[in-house]
Image 1: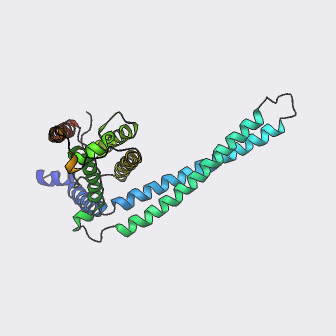
Image 2: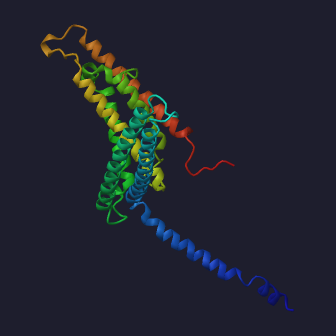
Length: 274
């Protein structure tokens, strides 16, 4: 047989397979392009499915708790009955009922979240600033700016010194939540994220925001030190203010260095262990 014909007979399937692979790749690319636009909606739908599973689990646990109470009541007059079995079964039933109500409330909230995500979905991929990841990262940046404001504003630093104290429990909670959000933050808003990763980052930013709000409320409910009036300034006020500004500048430098080092040492999401 002619070598060319033999080669064609042996590898005839290459061209159709290559064409199919190219078509599938192009179709996948076209399907993947709108995913950034739908990221919030996809994440909300994922949260909704998880909430539905939570309701199913909570209702199953409620049925078990009711059955356990009925069994304990039935065995109350038998020799097998143990002291305190019925009160304990009632306590577990009350816990199961609260968990079931909480699961239903979570489901309602997640349904509302899906509706909100659908309403906020950008109409076009050209609206870069309205993309879900861009909005979420901007929200995270705004939280960081609020925090750094206490480092750079001398008046706030004097009036609310606890907002600069990492040992203060509300700030300790915020710093831990913010650290988690920073680890989950993508390298840029152009990174492709799975809905589950986006949902985890979004929840971390929300927890950090709630923790910071709680810290601010606690600081303002305390007794902040009053700032002296301009005419009543003590002679060393200028030195105090300058020290605070110097400390703020050092804090900014340290924060920037730590941020850059953490981002540099953090492994890329695309890396895979060998």
